[in-house]
Length: 119
Image (cartoon, rainbow, N blue to C red; front, side, top):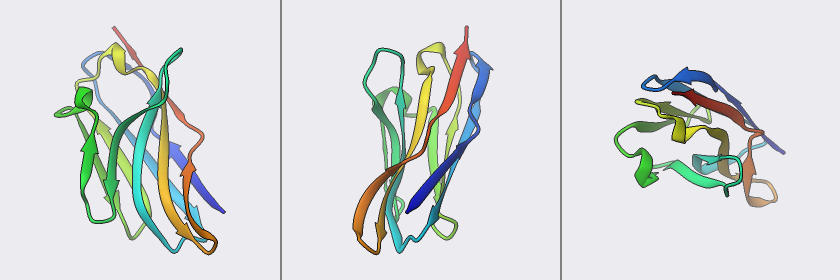
């Protein structure tokens, strides 16, 4: 079983910054990729950013240049630095990990952390 625990969400004014963090724990052999998704009210969950174990990153076009994803492979953690925030990014942010465990490779999700940007 793999657990993902997120932290760092909250309320911030437009133009501000937030840093989200996520730690994976459990019987993990390796983590192929970690990332952040978000889901706003009435919308589908969408990819924000992802990073592989080798450090390759992928960003949604809407966050390029403002958000930075980073990862500590030794600690099984991933972070998302979010700058120049605007109200359009308000959503629940979910940590995601593709992990190899004894039974195979699976996708795991955190419980989500709320990010609210006020105008």
